[in-house]
Image 1 (cartoon, rainbow, N blue to C red):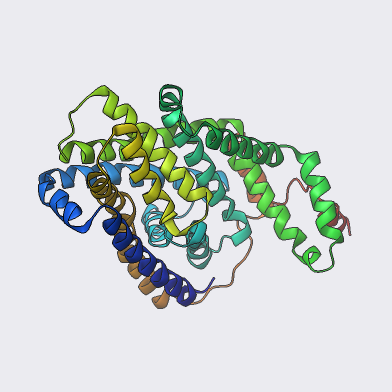
Image 2: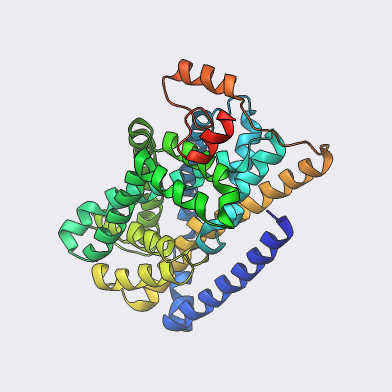
Length: 360
């Protein structure tokens, strides 16, 4: 992980965001967009941002829960909070890969191996995706739009869950990895990565965190709904249902296609679906998209950049530390007995290479 490279990618993503803003404004007609922004009820913007913050705070609870699941229990809440919100600065990197920054910071501050904590990001994305599909499910039935997209995403998630929870399948994959000339040296890291993933997506954890994700993303759906109200639309149950369908579909599409922060894809989805489903003129749809994307994307990036500045200064002041596996085998066993949940780590090898090393 190289912070300088991440900052460079962040700058490129900001420039791409500016291009998307100009392009969307041109599509909606600059004069029409300017008029829509002038008519927007800006007094409702604090409420929109507050609803977005609910999403961030509940997702922080999920991050902290996952840390406990992989055995990181002695990390101060302040550090956990700063790590999570620092990751928001990197959501506009392609496929949100910059959010691996959280694992980097965890390793630097706490010493937790990267391979142990990195699966948290996958578990976060998985539960977020499932929650967004649940929120949009009713709208899918009523509006009948994008059902093929739902099927593809749902099947992909099901395949991932099967592999994550089915040890024989992963044993076969790891045996293949061990035979590859270059990749074989990383087999032990893949094992640790898998063990964390296996724990994080256990049925209990998956159910609890998906439910929490539904609550957190409902905050952004409400923020989108309030945005539409601030543009003069009538407050109806149908409009809320439309918001609960359009925002999740556009968000998941942006994540699946791996554009930085969904840039371009999410904006296009929001603008297009607002015109098709809500029957908004394109200028007004463009204004709604610009405002909700500021509230749900760029506002978080600004918060994350401020938090990352604090974390960077703290890292510069602290002495360098040696990274050691945390926790050890004894701690893993004790934690597993206490929680009743199998712990990620070396206690249950799934590949032949690790077993042979320990047997030696």
